[in-house]
Structures are given as structure tokens and as C-alpha cells.
Length: 142
Image 1 (cartoon, rainbow, N blue to C red):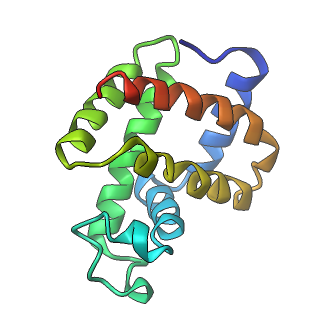
Image 2 (image 1 turned 90 degrees about the vertical axis):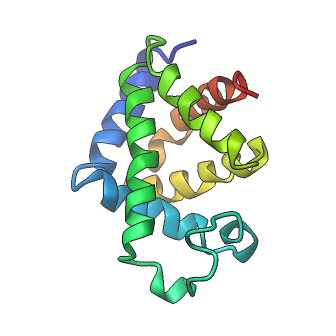
């Protein structure tokens, strides 16, 4: 399981651009996109009772977002296969929390929207392939 050639380069370059300020900033941006939908927001015990208008800058959103970005960073840096363990660890946590693969897959459009806003929309096809690999590693756990 790996990403090669132009796809790997496109992902790495766009990733560098996305996380240039911090993992927490990037994670917050992704989670603000993800949590716009109330039914999605309801899946997060830490956030479900916080009005959407108060999520930006919220410490819990930034912390959780940073952790998600760290898992993606580990996965991207370990595209030779070593990054799968970070995804599997996250999958075990998701499984214990009762989250489905469909719920996890909701992260992809939010991530792609943030990448597009960062000027990385031309890497979308590469990110589609990366996400397919990410979800395959996630599904290995349950």
C-alpha cells in the first residue's frame, strides 16, 4: 500500500502548504468544515453542545483537530507502509467510540475543501487516492 510518483509529490507539497502554520490551525480549519453539519457535529461528545459560532478558537476543537492532523502527517510521512500503524491506532479509538467508517469518511470532503481554499485544489485526485489508502488501513482494524 503506497502512493507513488506524481500523486505522492502532489500530496506532500499540498500537505506542507496546509500545515505550514501549525497542526492545530490546520485541524481547526478542517473541523470547522466538518462540524457545519449538525448531524455530524452530534457524533462528537466534546463539541455537540457548543454552538457552531463558538467553535472557532475552541481549545477542544483545536486539540482534537491537531491530533487528527498528526495522524495524517504520520500516514503521509510513512507512505512506505510505516504510517499505517498511526491510522490503525486511530481506528481502534474510533471503533471503541462506536464510530462507523462512513462517519470517518466524512472527513475527506472537509479536508479537500480546506486544501482547495489553501490553493491546492489541483492535488484533489492525489488526495482521493491517499484517502482511499487511509480508509483501507482504517478498515483493517474493524
